[in-house]
Length: 334
Ligand SMILES: *[C@@H]1O[C@H](CO)[C@@H](O)[C@H](O)[C@H]1NC(C)=O
Image 1 (tube, protein in one colour):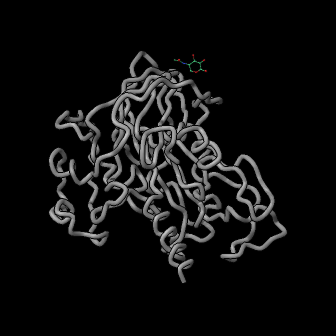
Image 2: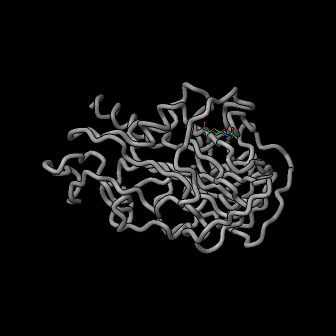
Image 3: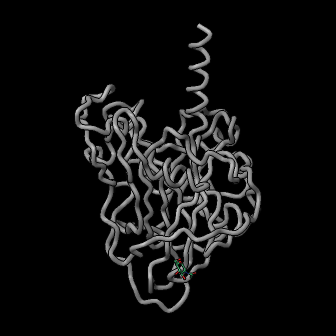
């Protein structure tokens, strides 16, 4: 009995704490400041109750697939970069430091990065990097995956380079980790399970006299489907001789990363550049302390959100503009 409760508590804790998002961006190894340029997903702190949790997004048709919950709300700053700059996204879970677990160690899956003009339009997200499973291990081990075997092992650092010659302008970078630990079945078939998506967006302004325009890309939502082998995949089923325990999904060894192929204009190699010290706070404040004061939220349920009387039953309605608006610098969130 006691053992059962302990297990239950640890499972609940695991669920509540399973979130990961970008806490900062290093440009050529230099931190731009905690949360600078980052569209912070709704996050209610480690013990937050009510309001929205930061992801996971599981409904592939939800607007939250684009830039996570409340991803339409602009960050106050935009990070200025040049083509060829090395960007390091600093993903964390509870604290922005090297002791943070980054993402729960069960959340095996791929990592992906897209770039789109800001604001995104139909088919405007172009893939510039991805990483899936890079080592298979015998059943029942999960093998080595980007999220748990690379990003989490490297202090949350996810690297990408601004494409060579990219035309100046405002862009959104959509970076994402995917937890496939419950991805043996689709969310459509069983909403209690399904792949867990952790998208997060960063606002950049590319400077310089580049002339390269992005090709046609994909839309979020829209890019992924419940039919994709990279969305429904059993990570604990690494050999073809063993049957998966939890589903009838065939046991597949190879992993196909979801979404399109990486654009040929992206850098073929992505190097991890050494990063300097973090500039800014290393703990996050509950989003409910800033959402009411410095954001325009027109959702009918916003009063509920503000007073924290909702517990996941109401829905924030994202409102994406189709014209670029300069972010307004108002009260600091952090
Ligand atoms: C980015 O990293 C590559 C590989 O280490 C390096 O050659 C290049 O000079 C870096 N770019 C900048 C702008 O520092």
